[in-house]
Structures are given as C-alpha cells and as structure tokens.
Length: 523
Image (cartoon, rainbow, N blue to C red; front, side):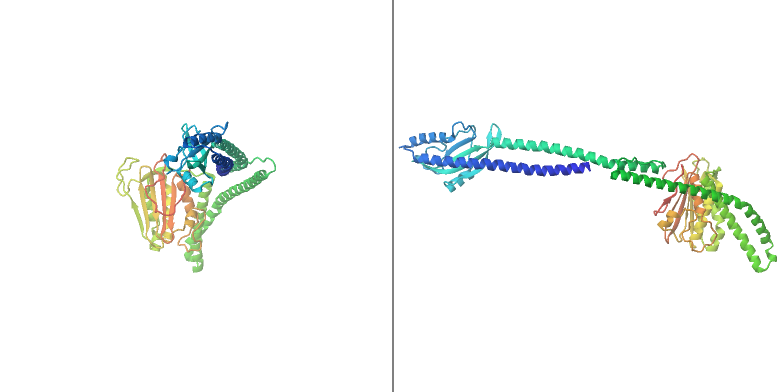
C-alpha cells in the first residue's frame, strides 16, 4: 500500500508539475513575445520615419546616417538583451549596396535563420518572428528574432531585425522548475510517510490477530488480542477475542468428549471380556451338542458360535484401539523376514480367495546378500529381514490381503516384497472396484466403509485399516494408498529395517502414479 500510494502520488505530481511547468513557460514566452513584438513594431516604424527624413546625397552618407540610426534603435542603457540588424536582401545590386549588416551589437555571432529571412521578404512590412538558439560562451541561449522590410534611401529595401535575449525568462523558468521538483519530492516523501503511518495503524491489529491465531494453532488457546479504544479496529479485536473464546470452549468440550469416548470404549471393552468369556463357553457347549437338536435349533447354535467369534474380533480391535488412544501400545521387536510374513498372510487368505475365485500372487524381489545383517539370504527368502513386531506386521499384512481379496471382484491380487539398505516394503494391489479420491482420503478412518450397503464375503469391524495405520506409525513407518474407480487399489507398507533407521521420502517399491494418501511417520 505504501509503495502503490507513493508511486501513484509521484505519477500525479509528475503530471501536475509537467502541466504547470508548461503553462508557466508558455505564459513567460507569450508575455515576452508580446513585449518584443511591440518594441520591434515601434522600432521599425521609427526607423522607417527616420529613413524617410535622410538628406544624404551618396551611398557613403547613407551608410553613416544608417549606422547612427541603428545605434539609436539599439537604445542607450538597454544592455545586451536586444540587438538590431539591418541585412541586405539576396540579389541586391552591388552599386547600391551599403553593406549586408550595417550594425550588430551582439557579444557573439548572431545568425538570422534563412526561413525567417524568406518570410520577412515575402511579408514586406508585416512583422515576422521566430525563436532561435544562440551559442554564447559554449552555452545555448534562447533568443527571439522579429523582422520586417524597410526602405533605405538610395540603397533600396533592406531587412530590419530586432533580436531579443530570453535568458532572463529562461532563468525564471528554470527556477520555477527547480521549485516544483523540490516541492514534488517533499510532497511525495510526506505522502509516503503519512501512508506508512496510516497503514501501520491499520495493519498492526491484523498482524496481531495473525500472530494470536498462529499461537492458537500451536495450542496456546488462551492467547487474546489487546483491545484499545472503541474504533473499528477495537471492535475487530473484541470480535476476534469472542470468537477465540468460543473456539476454546468448543475445543475443550470436544477434547473432554473424546476423552470420555476413549474411556468409555476402553471400559466397555474390558468389562465385556468376562461376560463374553461365559457366553463363549456356553456357545461352545451348545455348538458341540448341535447334532442332538432339531435343525432350526442346530442352525441357531452355529450362528451363535460364528457371531461370538465376530464379537470377540470386534472386542479385540476395540481393546487395541483403546491402547493406542491411551499411548500404552509397545513394540516387541525381533528380526524376521518380512517376505515370509507376506507368504503366511497370503496362505491365511487362501480359503477366502478360493471362494471368490481370486488368484493370489506373492513376489519377493530377491537380494543375494542382506546388507543389514551381512548374511546370505536363505533359499526362498530374499534378504528382506527387518526388526519389527511380528504380531503387528502379520496383522497389517493379513488385513491388507483380505481387503484386497474382498474388493478384488475375483481378479488377481498381487503382493510384492522388496527391501533396500534402509527400509522394507510390502505392496498389495487388487484390480477390483477401486477407490475414489474422497474414499482414499477416508480409508484409514475408524468404522468407515466405502459402501456400507455392499454385500461382504466376510464379517468386519471397520477398524482393520485404522489399526494397520497405527501399527505402521508405531514402527515409525508409513502406510500409503492409491486407487481409481474400476481400476483397483494399491496399499504400500514401508517400515524401517532397524530400530535406528530413519525413513526418507522414497520406498523400495513405487506406488502407482495416482492419488496418494499417506499416514506420516510418528515422531
């Protein structure tokens, strides 16, 4: 705002200054020109009257009397601001010539332009004038030349010129221009300073609001703006503080509600274990004796047994989530071959794959020597060992493979395992229904499903991918997903190979060039 205001003011002042300077210059010139034309007209009339009164009998006497007359026309005490010239027209008869320039009082060479001389000869006694530039001591000085024709006795018609020095007018104009420049500079400077002060007063509360908002974003919810006065900015600060207080109250309520929800889930999960164990034991007894029951009762016993299994899975997932919420989850690290874990996960999903007609392909990209351990890879492994929690990684891989089979629409599911010096990666890709960008953004949310109404081949709690992401973050790794509707989805699990390794932005296996949602590594 300061720069824009200053530039606009400079432009306005420059335009106004140029206009004023031009007007002053025109007025000075017009005033001096009118004065010069009046003096030249009087001088020409006086000269012609004196020429008519000459009593000379020959050319010599005419020349003497003419020089005396021109000296009188020059004026006594006038100085060098006016010069009189009497020039012989081109083509005059030599015998009647009394000189091409009978008198010149200039301190330097004065030359009348040919264009003016031609205009004077054509105009006769009518005045003609033209601005000229004269070099005086190496400096160009402005002059005004005014001419007309006069008749000299015996000699004939001659050109009479009055030349006026405009140096004083030019000096006045220069002084005015310097004054305008200084005034413009001072005005622009003052406008810039005033604008800076005003902008500072207006922007300072906005900067304060931005700083308070930034601190609130960092968690300092108690920060507020200082309210001064009763103007619009004060009302803005008061409104901001009211909004901040409302947000703080709502965030506090949400935090309390979240804490209550986590505590509720944890308490309910723990409290349900005892009655669920009793129900489980009773269900097993009934399930084992189902052959002695009527068909309807036997079917009910089977449904009770399977639903208790789903209930136990849901309860186990809820307990696992409650551990993460409470920060009580811990890793039991050991060195294992992740390729072996991937094969086990695929073998565990084979019954489901056979029912859906899905082909499972597991590819472990071989590494002749494990760079981390320095040990040659055993046959069938591939040098993809890493220090991980076996139980948690197996659970992640099992969830990814089962989900791929469920959503693969009977098409092949590809599982790739690879490692480099820093990380080990497992990529699970299906070619089924795929994911929209909105689905990919929420795929790791708890209890979320892409299409709740879609028939499912197996039971599910809606917590599998959420727990998988938490397991990846607990390992200081990441779980990524890309997908497109109708083209399938790809999940990529990347884990550090050692507990001290730091993951970079890359991975041993690439993702497909599609929309990517990443669970960032936990600090």
